[in-house]
Image 1 (cartoon, rainbow, N blue to C red):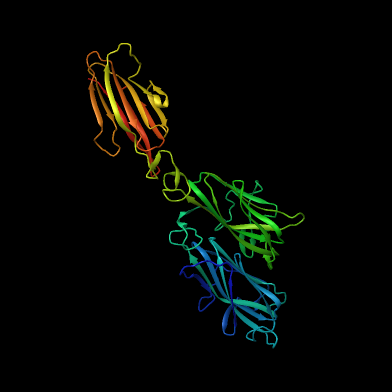
Image 2 (tube, rainbow, N blue to C red):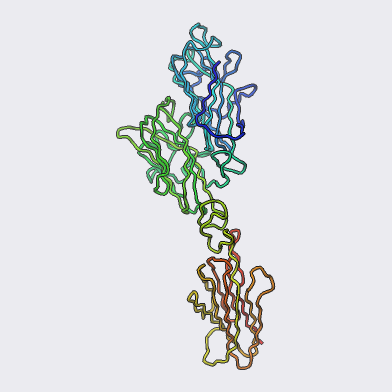
Length: 515
């Protein structure tokens, strides 16, 4: 018996073992649910040398293919173990096992092995091989395809498998995507997924005008493929209103179909090239798009800086003049690395890795926090008896720092930039005899009751009450105020944003109470 170990990509692993998530075709477990079987010449199962096989003698032969697609939890490596049986007169012919991009291919010969279960001949032997493939893998879907290039009747040369085991190295808990067991993978949030449970185009267009449809390759449905998507074509999609973020990660599979020799597959994000690969396809042909063609799967992962609230994704392939070849896509996941809460522009996920806070937030101890309300630091109240002072409404408000002079009733929004450390409200109130003017000025953001509160009686002959109140900002931030004016009340509130909810904080209130 021959044992073959194929390690496609080495990964540093710290005391972590593969977790088995699927087994089939061993013991009492011969459940083939979800397996696609193409060109089976006999019954589904045969026995060879006391072992039950999927396929086997005179069953899997020329053009036979089996495949299955697996939905995987977050992981960074997969391991596939399977016992392959070569049966009878293989004439330097090849068995192919595809584990996405990872592959096992080997030639077998008639005289290899012993006479266990095929037709009786001293030169046509049968041979079991334990195959193991380990692949660095980040996609949420895994494709398994097994086939051969046998060219005679299955009675003369055939194959089968048993003892199929799939294991993964899992991402750390709470991570949706990772590169190993130690990286800071909790930063990634899934923004969008395509071509996994459904092949709906979801806005993807071929060459900007044709909705992207699907095809079947090796029993697996893929977006594009033969004859839908050819060399020289591109597919494109645009997403808007992305959450605030600083990086994106795109993970997907490219299916290369037909004769490729140094053509280039590329991924562009917002007109910038972030991935390109020159491709050569020398794989065994199998049924794909209704005809036999060479097929190669390439796993792609691209991580790039990105902060825009929109993203435009373009996938394309160059074409050699006169050549017709195809390509397809499956299992595309788009992840974003979000900035910390309250951060508008950042360079990392930590609260201290923020460059600019969102509106209504500001920096405190190098972190973005909801901006406290402005606080009154000084107030002066004067009663004036001046017959030359006349205005049609009860209140006049002047704010020099933002060039505002408000004389009419209604609601007015005022934006105060973070570069303005103090702001003075000059408020004139019409004060008629025997009226009382009650006023409130916030001077402590954390206090419930210890605020500036006044009550002024309009004396005989007084016709105007003047307030000069200066407020200072607690932390630098842009402030949005709403000034509400009516005949009997003036209110000034500051809008605060916490937990995606806008609330009002009362800054100034002046009421005219009739005597």
